[in-house]
Image (cartoon, rainbow, N blue to C red; front, side, top):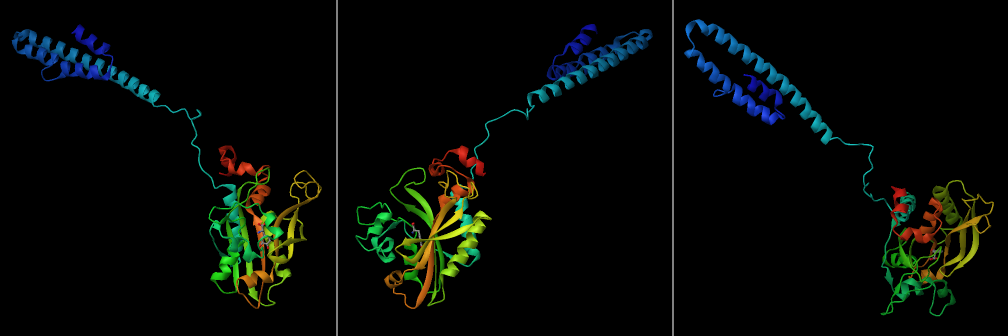
Length: 330
Ligand code: DAH
């Protein structure tokens, strides 16, 4: 019996203990074999023999149970250790995407005008001379064409230098009244701190009957829009020139970096230029055969708005695709 007890107490895994259990307690196991001997034991010794066997059996069972408990506990601890997760450990965090600040700014601007019942219009990025220049009162050889450094295509087309040609397309396709904006990419040969060869604009156009639209309406809507975008800023309309509007203005807001005190961003003027606008020039209406109408238009660069809103110092950062910039907008 001693060697059987040793087998139990020395089993080093649940697997080997189970094997021993079958060898010991099974139908054909060692204990069954011992009990089988009972019938050959002479009568007077039977009782003592049986008592001895039962004691041994009970002892083995007790040793088995203890060993089983111990090995089971060790097994559980081993599994817990192997499957432990250290929640304080860093892992390679997945780089998640975010809406690009230019697109987020575009959406914010679009939201404003949609609420005022403006439609969203679109046009081709490869434009023709008529829509990009001619119909916008920029005849061939007109010096104002130099305002925009144009990419010319081999077939005579141009990459649109602004979203203003969508005005022309919309007016040719529909009848007044018109309330539209046209967001989209535009292209110019330019590359520095504040210029990239591709950037985004939003063009706006309102056309109604003769005498129904005034500069006061334009001023009101743009002032409200700029407060929506930038909060409590001062707004000033400065006389300017655009071929497609007369009179024209550029609109400034008080510098949001120095609150008008003067700083590097506003070149010590205290003002930031944010958009161009004006009353639609009669020559533009003539080009699309509109009569007895009045209207105003405006145009703005979305990247400039995004840079001001998020205080981004270099326009080119918006196009480098550096996740360190983008992940801040998650
Ligand atoms: N198209 C002009 C540009 O690209 C922006 C602009 C200015 C659009 C005045 C307008 C406007 O409609 O009235 O610089």
